[in-house]
Image (cartoon, rainbow, N blue to C red; front, side):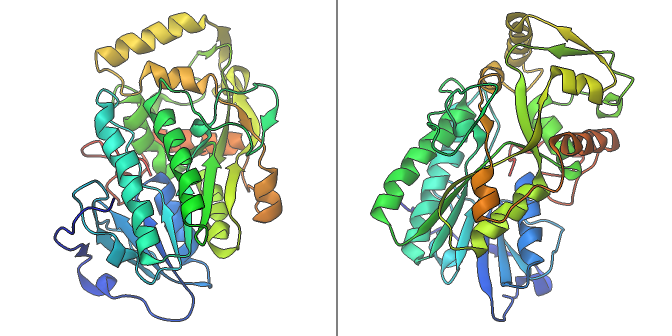
Length: 365
């Protein structure tokens, strides 16, 4: 399934183009410059058991963590041959994902599904012993709203939402992949919503568009918060998720791991965060407003994604705590409050997806 080689990857000019040497693990991170990618790269680079990190991204960043070198790569069909980039790696962490354009789902499918298939094929062809894949809470089928589910809950997604449909499809691909390649240690990370200060500008562009004035998202300036039936979701600080990804690389584990922090966020909790009054609104009316704004291209997030959020199950992260020795350091409220602070500050990082200004990036990893 891997396409024919294209012109070779572009190294970062200067010393970063040199392959770090030394004893320890060699890890390749695919989709290394977004919200999750930057945290995973930093977590790996900071660990003494990791000798080198190769960060693959469409655009090379002006950010240089220790032990890290960069390659400009497209994972889509017709892109570079990925096998040479994976050759000799001890693990590949696959994070690359395109959230937009929601009006052209065939385009996101090409990157998210067909690109992922190329990554999976290259891992097998290069003989990499471990593949850590970024799945999501969005891969899960609708579930109960008042009790958490473990990793055995069905992963058929919410089929109307492209994001969920693509995540669920890749779960089925990996089911077959593990049967064909039992020697590859496959780990599927299924985190809740991930937030950090530096991701705020990117996530505003991806989900709310430029109409949301980040400087006004502060307690006291938003008088009302809608309280919707079914709106109850979990959040997690991205750095805490990255710590779990790091442990999945370092430890001889396989299978799926839920990642989430408490408490769940609902309308009442959000109202407290904003020092606002919760107001119960009919879900159908809110959805109609989102659908109208999406059709007029005023907001990039589709109403189908809104439908999916209202149906997501809560996650039981006990397995990650027991087998990865993982515990989130921040609560869901702290992660969300840090994200809001980033919105007000226009926070970001010197990578293409996380840049606080400039052209919006469709990539979100």
